[in-house]
Structures are given as C-alpha cells and as structure tokens.
Amino acid sequence: MLPRHIGIIMDGNGRWARQRGLQRTDGHRAGIQTIRKVMQAADRAGVHHLTLYAFSTENWSRPAEEVGALMGLFEETLAKEVDELDASGVQIRVIGRRGPLTTGLRRLIDAAEARTRGNRTGMLCVAINYGGRAEIVDAVRSLAQGGADLARVDEAELAGALYTAGLPDPDLIIRTAGEHRMSNFLIWQAAYAELHVSPTLWPDFGERELELALQDFAARQRRFGGVAG
Image (cartoon, rainbow, N blue to C red; front, side, top):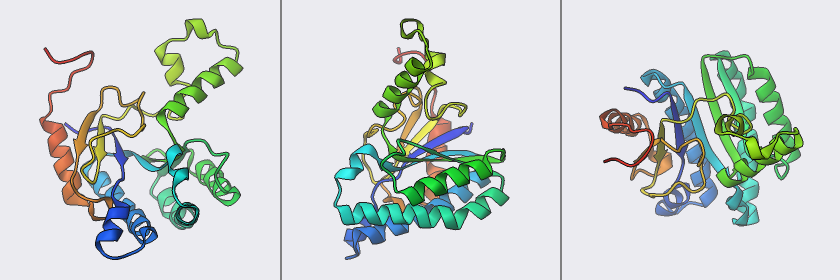
C-alpha cells in the first residue's frame, strides 16, 4: 500500500549546519538540495503528490538576515528548477499567504503556477508563509466574501475553499529531525493521515529514509472515523 500524497515537515537544517560549524543559511541551502533527491525517490516509488513545509507564518520571527537569505533561496531555486519540473510534467503549486513575500518571489510563483497548471504527471506543492490555522481562517473569509451562508457550510464546501482545493488529502505526514509535532501543518487535511517521525535531519534525508517511511506506512492499519477500539 502506497500513500497517494505525502506531506513533509522539513526540519533540522539549522542543527545540521551547527553540527558542522556552518551558518544556518548553509543548512537551508543543503535542505533545498535535498528536495530534488526526495522528489526523485518518491517518483521512483510511485508517489506523485508531495507537499513540503518550507516556511511557516511563525518563521518571520527569525533573524532578518536568515529570513532574507531564505527568500533569496526560494527565488533562486524556483527560477532554476521550473524548466525541469515542467518538462517532467510536474505541476507546481505554492500555498500560504503571499502578501508578505518579496515581489520577485511572488512573480516567480505566479509564472511557475501558470506555466505548469496543465501538467498531470505529478504535483509539487510548497508551503511558504503557511499556517494551517491561517488557511482555515482564509477559507472562511473567502466563503463569506463569496456570499456563502456560513451557518450552512459543510466540510466539503470548506475543503473546497482551502489552499489545497483539488488535491487529495495527505495519507502520510513525515517529520524529520525527530520532532513529534505537527507545527500547524495541513491540520485540516491531515486529520486522518499517518505520522512518521524520522530522526534524520532534513539535509541528510534521502531515498533510504523515504523507503523506511513508506514501509512504516504500509504496515499501518488505517482507521477513519475515531480512536481505535
């Protein structure tokens, strides 16, 4: 049994850098490079929908220098990778509140999404300035602005107003670096997802670690609708 959609909380870049006497930005750059390896490994395994938690709404509290470097990395990576992703038939979607992002990054996101919108081989969804609670608030606001009767809104209607509308819910959430929390990631969509915690820091995460997560998932007895009896 394979998950159709995997969400990954990419944690441990800073610790990876600190262990090597490097700057945190070096860890972030190494983490960006890991994304390609994991995407390729997931594709070989038969998983074609990935959502990656790249930058949360809480991450703005980090030092301005680090935040600026991250935004620059996002711009550099998107500009560099869009040709190959498009040629591979991968659709790119970026979820989160875009207002605070740099103008250059917003333009690159808009262009990448427009260019790859018709691709159907796979989906790479990247969460930037994302928070699960903020997403739900934005969905409710969108419904209200559209004239919906909020007293009658059901789960399907709310799900259709989320950033991830049209995507299957994640079957598996992977968190790296040994942390056991969701950190406000896909909290609506992951209601019935299985959670796999890897002790590996994100820059060191690769095909073997993904295989272990998939093996763990395959061994689970999934239940939808309540606690186990």
